[in-house]
Amino acid sequence: MNDSSTTEIRRQVLTLSPQSWLLGAGYLTLYLLLDWASYVQPLRHTSITPWNPNTGVVMALLLTRGWRWAPLVTLGIFVGELLTDDAPAPWWVRALASGYLALVYTLAAWGLRRRGLGRPIGTPKAAAWFAGVTAAASGVAAAGYVAMLVSAGVLNSSEAWTSVGRYWIGEFNGIIALTPVLLLGVGRAVRWDDMLRHRRELMLQALGAVFGVALAFALAAARDVRLFYPLFAPVTWVALRHGVPGAMISVSLVQAALVAALEFTPGSIPLFDVQFPLLSLGVTALFLGALATQRDSTLRQMRQQDAALQRSMRFAVAGQLASALTHELNQPMTALLSYVRSAELMTEPPARADERLSGTLRKAGEEAGRAAAVLRRLREFYRGEGARLEPTDALSVCTRVAEALRDRMRRSAVEFKLRRAGMPSVMADRTQLEIVMHNLLTNCLDAFDALPATGSRSRRIEVTAEARGADVLIGIDDSGPGIAANLTERLFEPFVTSKISGMGLGLSLSRSFLRSQGGDLWSEPSRLGGARFVIRLATRVTPQTSM
Ligand code: ADP
Image 1 (tube, rainbow, N blue to C red):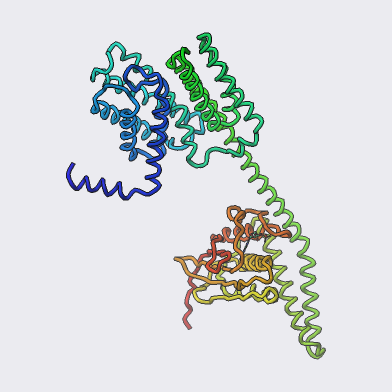
Image 2 (cartoon, helix red, strand yellow; image 1 turned 135 degrees about the horizontal axis):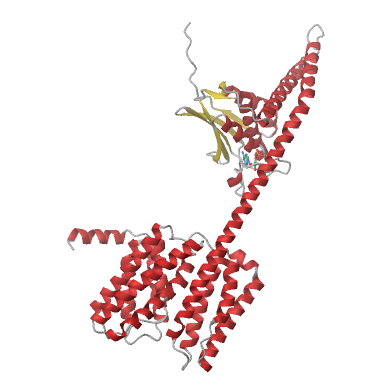
């Protein structure tokens, strides 16, 4: 290796993040601990033992982190060989064997990762790929490892086939039980709260497993009877109830308990004799667990779809209701409007009525006219009629809405600011845009009203605009409390509200309006400290007319 590549490797190692160092140290500790604990009843002077959970840790690391961790895996295997084995193999044979084992498992993990299996197993298909690839990899690992020991003279060639078989099953057993458990750490796959909800059942399942292990062990120790079937009942029960997490946690515990019981009882059956029952238990639990996990996630999806359907049905019903209401209210509204107009006429000179009365009647007339227009547009929208786009001065729409809300703003001590710069003409349905602005500004005021009156916070609403390509973004910022954390994800869904008398339709309707105009509406945190809603609409350059 030349100087520059050594420097490069040193640089890469030194620039590793603290988390990587921690993970590496944790991995090595766990690997060596398990290697040491499971180094029981080895085949003469080799590291061929009946059960290798440490290889389960190797696969978990390579599956979640990728091939870059292969050097650490090699180092772990090599140190494990040096520390735990009493094999007389020279160090270079151990080094070669460690490199070989790491290479085989790295390739297997690389293949599985390419199929997206670097995460918790959740379907029978994923379980089949995982079991198939690890069975093949542990077979290849066992054959190569034994071949190296035979050529180094550590093993007789007459022992080769038995050794390959035993090493193979030991490795496969360790991976199939422990790797799925370690993979559960990725993406919060375990629903502990679900598990703990069935506490009594969990206790019975644990009792069943303890009984199964005790029976298997007692019969093996006292009468030399190999009876492992009782272990299947509790593990199957757990797998069907709790899916892959429950299944593989229980298999790992049962494996460890049985190996420990048999190891510490002098004169009981050899551990190699339990390799096959343990493997069958692992494979059965993995497939049953995967089936149960898939069933649970399908049920969960169906429940979510059902909830979404219910919501859209409620929305449709609300639409019908709105349509009926607008139809019924339209006539009295028109009548009200003409009465107000007549009253206005009556207050004109020469009646010399109070000027305030005529001013109030004018405002009442404007509001009634606006309400009638809103009702009409709502009715058209719910009937599925499209928006009427026209070049619209968004600024004047906003000013008009703010004017209508001026009294409320004054009562709530809110300072309203409209920045005029950068507010070009947009292509919009004027009435719909007015409804949207009205919704957004009243939401800001509602948010201020929900705050304690004595708060030291300044109460500000600011409307700004900026051109973005062919669009204009209109931002409505407030210095209120901001969007409640539990609402952010579902803010634009119908019937989502934090107000006692709220309907939760304002934002969803506003977004539907804007999207039907080719625009959009979203929310983000505001630089004023509260909420910010952004309206996106298309602009259109008004053609210049020459005089
Ligand atoms: P409603 O006003 O009937 O509750 P909306 O769809 O208009 O229905 O609003 C949904 C929810 O979004 C409100 O209940 C409120 O919790 C939240 N929200 C909307 N705008 C703001 C804002 N400016 N500040 C804080 N929360 C807001």
